Every structure is written in C-alpha cells, then in structure tokens.
Image 1 (cartoon, rainbow, N blue to C red):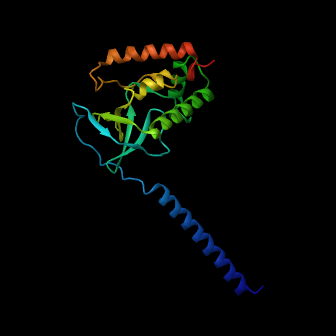
Image 2 (image 1 turned 180 degrees about the vertical axis):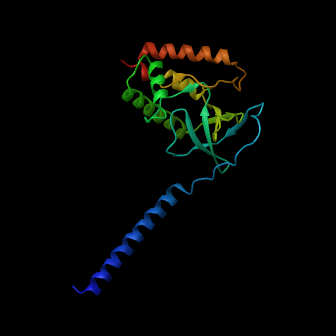
Image 3 (image 1 turned 180 degrees about the horizontal axis):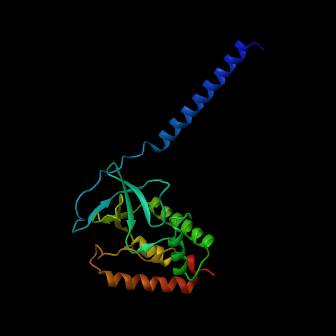
Length: 211
C-alpha cells in the first residue's frame, strides 16, 4: 500500500471516530439536556424564615451522597446538605480518615470497608427517594461552613423528613447541625424523635446496625 493511500485511510478512520464521538455527545445532550448553571453565590447571614422550594429535581453528580446532593430548581443548580443526619463517607483518603473512623464508632465499631459500603447504601437510598419526586425542600440558606452547600430539610408527602427516613433505615447517625423545623418542632423534640428511630433501627438490625 502506498504511503498516500495509508494516510488517506487513516484520516478516514480518524474522521469516523470523531463523528461517532460527536454523535454520542449529541445523544447524551438529547437524553439529559445541558446541566443547569450553579445558582449565584449568596451573601450575608442566613434567613430567619424558611424558604420553600417545590418541584425541585435531583441532579446526577459525582459529589452526591446520602446526606448531601445537588438539585435543580427554577433553572439553577443548588447544593444542599441535611440537618441532623450524617451518612457515612463513600470513599477513604487521608483527609477524611478520621471522620470515617468516627462514623464507624457511631455504629458500634464497623471496619473501614463496611463503613464505606454503608455510605454507598445511603447514597443509593437517597437517590432512589429523590428521583421518585414528591418532596419539598425547606432552607434558610444557612451555609455549611465556608462552602457552596446550604442546610435544608427535605420533606416527603408522608410528612417525614429525609433525615428521619435515613435514621430509621440505619443509614445515618444523628450528628451535625440541627435547627427548629418548618412545622414548628424544636431541636430537642426532633432529636428525641430521631433517637427513637435509631433505637428501632438498632433493635431490628437495619443498615449499619446489621451484625
């Protein structure tokens, strides 16, 4: 084969692969659409009253886990983190090793592998609930430390918050920042409710309480 024919065939193959990649990208855009832009940064202190977001939908994102996730609302992407509930990490690195050990102790002394598996179970649990829809988000735009995340309550049609569902399933410990609920319940009242659900999960051997 002459060098000219070889180069021409190689260019054709490269062109074909480029077209296939473009077609695959176009298919993904057609299936899922362009991701919404992130909401602009919020300045100033948290609001004194809750803002209610209806009709939000879960966004697929690599940082989503059991207690922290991105949603789209009003054409903008928001990153929320639950009050009260802390789910296990889904990966281990030097930066979060101490946190993973602390989460393991909260469930009676799990090993690292079981703790990470528990984190993945929580992530899948939350994703399934949020993808099914029918939830309302209540937030005061209280920032999670110095990050782009904001604390929120996620309430379903049955009146339960996502933190309650996670604790009942044995997929979260009662930990992190709390707040009075939008329905008027105070912090201590809701913590007592979560403690009851945690005891039930431990007795039934659910989630991280399985032995």
